[in-house]
Length: 612
Image (cartoon, rainbow, N blue to C red; front, side):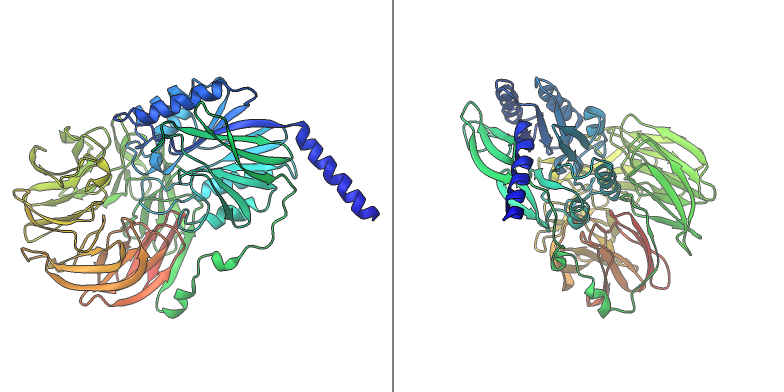
């Protein structure tokens, strides 16, 4: 009985401590501010005014999707509205700032100063972090360096301080590919809840035993007014929905208590059992950099080149994976490099195009633009072709960096690599257009539009291929299109297979491949004047929209998925030859080697040499 009384007394004391420091804050999420639709901005302004009219609100948390498209003007508009708050606000980033962003999501950092935050308020630790991925189309993803940052911040905090974590995506399967890496960190500490948005509704979820609270959007949607969330912290965390100019509505309470989590349910984690079935596939070496990588590696001689999320450009040894040198740029690198004649070229979101010596990493030349460069260079006949975010596509002399010509009529950014054929350089941009320029002077030969008006459907992430006088592309509109290289006219166009942003060409140039969004891989006759199917196979990789191009070498098509599965498919009949699971995050387009080997990188920060 004494023990029971003592326990009750301690519990009351514990509750009294929190009750004596009761405080309130507001949470805004999924604002979706945009320049061509003023309603989201009006909804945010109303939320700001409503909070300013309330008493005893200590601060506001903003948990992502601040804008619709991550563009600078929308970010600045959102900031001007949030700056109207009479109290501090703390902000993190959402997927809409990360995928479609001409700055490679760096404008968010410039406008708001950071994409994550940490602070302590009345005995509670608040920590907010991003759940990407940057530019890539896949599940949400927490960069490994951000996971390490959260761990370090919490490890350095006062022992047992209650923690409230904030992000955008729900930390669960189907939303964030590596959610378990973050929950494994959070479970070590006294984390009370994880707050977020993304679903535009109020909901209580379970993130590996940690309560997850999803909050309504500030948007009015089908209602006459928008709203937001209010939190009261005392002996419990009380959650309210607050519609504009209406009384708040309580919908949830979660007790504040010392958290000690049980062992996680490992059945929810990714399985690597598939690797037991294909022993012929093995990793020769693996480098785990702990920094996200969004670039396809380039290879020359015994060197592998790639850029990372922290702005470093790396050279590692092909035979061992050991570092050779690295070069620091001013911001993250999304541009996949090209290498020729002991020179490696790439762009950076710092606005520069770099050319380095392959042996030493010494800079040979640099060209500065006014905006980020995410386009991937193509080197052909000692000429570098590359697009940027400043409305320009350029050609440079490889040796000197001299600009040979500039096409300045793009309406949005370039992220893909071009293809050259029949005296034309061809590529897509996020302005809904696919372009063909004259390789000699950069004048427009033709441009084609798929009929869509929204930039999100642009044929801009696919790397085009050319065969039999036709250029082949796929786009987010789920169509596969063959255009005449000379005229830009449609030869054929089909949505039969629901392909998206992946296309490849056979080594003999007679067959084009694409991965469908659900399980299948398709091969079409590149020489036919209609989409003639050679084969279609169920590769059983599930739903996937990762723009990892299918690459054929030695009769095997190799591609990666958004959840770390690498597949090998027979190029002649489509039979699945093998599968190998690398991790659980995006595998970028692979770089084939020889003797059935490839080099790949992942958003988890892995660089691997694979033999199959």
